Image (cartoon, rainbow, N blue to C red):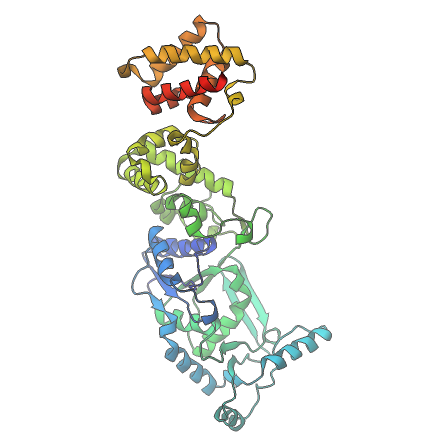
Length: 474
């Protein structure tokens, strides 16, 4: 049988980075084994459905390079198929309708907790006669359908990450497989779909590990072979709590909107809970496909560290700039969405800030002074080891020397040599001349070097800003 994996998100809003990792691991395992990677939209929870979320999910996966194979399955179009499966399970006494109200279930749970028992369904409707069930249904009573857990059995399962799992059926309760609105629960729907789609490996989050024995029982009741299961460890905040939006960005869209590169995010997420067995960190998608293995997935939760992601993104930006070509052109196109008014200077901007940014939004923020000089205090022009007189003298000398500098020689090495020579001749320290030039050009205490700024601005703008600084000091 051909190996086949699937990614099966619910269209409830954004794509969580944990879901991106699940999709990625499914994609890598399928491609490594010349198999298929399928996409299924699990939209049977009407309360959580968000308009447009399905289209957004597909768009983001495509942007990240995780294009699914074949037709996309949508669960809400398959209600009749789930109902047919439920009817089959009821007919073979593997499921039954339950007419208990929410109030009765709540009271039963409270009673169990008061007796220090594990809360679970008490089986009131489990042994209703077929006649009683039919009578209540005909009367229009609302009901769900529960799976009938076999008595006195041991359910054995095996997970590639967590190993063998053994559970007694008396520790499980009869769980709902069809809701009162006739929509299936996850427990039933995903199994029906996985069987039809011929899924060989179910790679999903570890939050579903406790439900695995229930899912095994449904497979057995339907007479189908169980696929191989792989449960992925949780993604954690640095404080080891579960990764959530309360502590920062968790949506793939958020990172893309801040100018993180898709390739960098994929590379970083791949290493959350999986390792290649050595110290390598930078991988192309083709290299990840070649190296990926389920056996190297860790049990321990993986910490999502924004500082580490920043490092990956910065490295990717540097690599792309160094390599040039089509990828560099694509980078410039991406930057133009952040700085649309200055497309003619994007190449210069990248060269100026390439080694200083973690993402492209930072480029927009860091470079704003290039186009609008901020209103800075005169005191900022004076270096901490200099004074007002030396600063004035340094700027006056710089203005005079730069004013005489010919345009064709306006290059970093020549500019640097000239200012160094002026400083030496007049016994000035770098803080007396280089520092105030930097502040005059940027209005900031932290920026690219004064020589880089001179080259970026050119002669006219540089002289204008230095003159403005001299006026501030008077």
